[in-house]
Structures are given as C-alpha cells and as structure tokens.
Image (tube, rainbow, N blue to C red; front, side, top):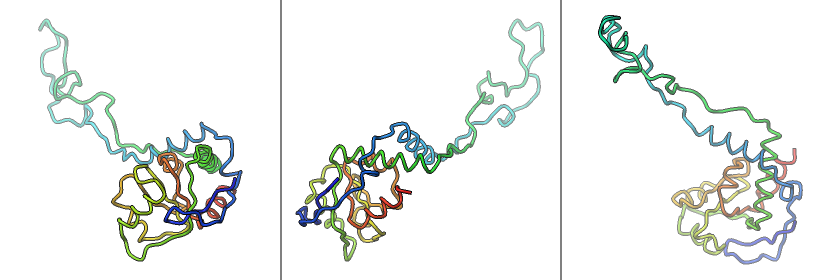
Length: 209
C-alpha cells in the first residue's frame, strides 16, 4: 500500500512510500494479538504481594481451651485462620506472572496490530526530523500540524533521538519509541501511529524474518 509522506508541518512532500503488504496488510490474528498483549501486561506486574499464613503470624501455639465440655467448637492455636488475627488461608505469595511466548507469535501479533491500524487509516508517515534542544512546545506544534493534538499518538523513530523523546515526555497522550522498542500493546494503545521514514526499513526488516 502507498502512503503519502508529510513533513512536520503537516504538508505533503510530494513523495510516497510503499508499505509492505506482508507487514501492513495481512489478515489480523486476534489470538496472537491477545497473547502478546497479555504477556506485556503480565510483565508489568511486580508480583510482590504477600499475606502471612498460619505459620507466620505472631501468636502462641498453645491450645486456647480444652477439647471437650465447653459447648462450642473445638479449637487449637490462636493462629487458626478462623480467628481474628489468624493466618490467611491460601493467601497471595510473591511470584512472577511472566510466561514464554514464541518469537513467531510475537511477530505475527505486531504485524496484525500494524494491519489493524492501516485498515483504519490511522498510520501517518512523516519525513525524518529532529530537535536541536528539548522543547515540548515544538512537539505540540508537530501534533497540531498533523491533527493529533487531542488524540493518543505513538511516534516511531528510526534511531534514538533524545531531544525528541524529552520533548514528548511531559505529554500524557503522546509517546516516542524507536522501531526496536515497539510492542503490540503500544501500537494498539495509540489512536494514531506516526512513522518516520527512517523507521520503515527497520520495522519491515524486524517483522519479515
């Protein structure tokens, strides 16, 4: 598919780029997308939750009353989970939520995400740009020129540019990554993708393996 190349002022440069059909025009695999997003979100979880169990709470292990003759249920230690202050039954323990996902599935998921965005016409290609110094106002002007001021956007650069990244850091609705940092979640979480010309070769090379 052909896409017009814009400059950072939102004007057409007169050039067009050909987006690979094998990356931007496949039949999306929803299950692969689900698995990749699930893995991404699982990896964000710290898994440091912990509740004290019967052996860990403070308290005596002495039998609190005699076994028979009280007219109530028999009871042992005050650490019994049935008592206030007792241990928690099957409480959460520290654990890792991460799980393995094959590279082939992850590539398919990212290609599916790109294809979804392309089908929705939510991909913009801009010529490579950089800022001399970090300047949030300049980045906002780029968003305005592209009509993305009030939309959640993801800028994908061919190579790391610290000034562009720092210029976007204070904006909640926009983020900047390089083509090697892309994830299925980031692609789908943005309303619009802004791809720099320099990022296209890297994206297609990474996903065509």
